[in-house]
Length: 486
Image (cartoon, rainbow, N blue to C red):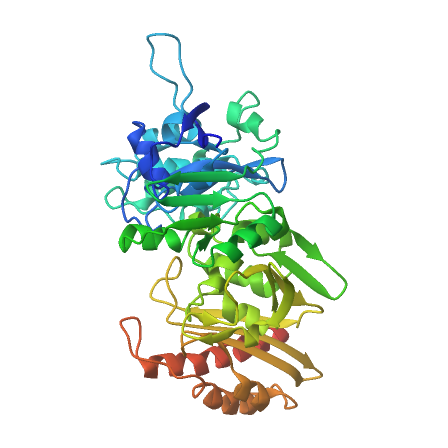
């Protein structure tokens, strides 16, 4: 067996003797790279963020910030990682390293007090610093509260929390960084291809982390080991390992399988590979599916979206996942692959119960198919306690065809109101064939309030959830009416 290794700050480091469930965070700290911190251990605070070289959209390589607390170290076998310590440039012998421009701005603008969260902020900020399509405004005073005059998207830091400094000086630092210098080694690194995926067989103490080279090999493995835990971005499994101390005899990674990482636009559908990260999908579609474009900024944080996949979000079967309502409204289907072949299942028929589905032992979600043409009137309404980076109390997605003032077709996906994500079939029927008027919408909103079986829990009461369903349809009507009148 070839020794599993990660290139960390330019030097190869063997993963051994770490256990297969050991996170990248713990692996790095064991090596003395203690800038990477554990704050929450579930991907919400960003104190652990590091940079990983990933296939790029505008250049061969993108520097992507990820949560080191969630990803098994073995999952980065053969890959390239940069920590906050690796951003500084080595000086002459006997002199301290020269600060990276991001580190320099954080220091001079007072962006750090206790310093616990600072390395994570720096890594997330560096990923945005190196984003190839980040462009400064022609007007030095350009930008807005969330986008700097230097093109910096503040949402790049949405997964990072600071408990003492305050966000204004951190924002000031983000909006002050310039463009990378031509001689910047990490900027130059973007012009070369990222490390190729490698097959991994890492085993210790009767547990194993496995990554096969092809989908066919993976499906054969899953036929032999139907009990294996399948992971892509590990944003869900990592929480189980950290918070609930779950362990698995066998973990099978599918995140780098080329057959699960394609995005194709055909004449009658768009096929999205199940192992593409949400960030990759967002940037490759570039707004081509407006309902997905509305979903992405509300799905967790950029740090999570840099690892999370549609396949993983659907595979967990959570009734409060953000993508199922949107994909239900889009009438998506899933391509399920097993050792004996593939089959296509409408997403509306996929969920069978709480965290249960029609997926058979040994089957994987290979791709998501969205039929074309798309409905022109769409919206995604997520009701949560925080605007971003929160779990929804209720989620509603709408896709309507409105012609000459009449609703010709309505598709509505709901989350958080039943044991599974559901289609609002009764509400769809109450809309179709009727005028898109206040009277129709008010009547349909009353129907929508009765969809599902919402429950009381710590996020919301059943009455609140029902009320928000009806309100979301009224909001959509108001938005479309305002758009027409303006």
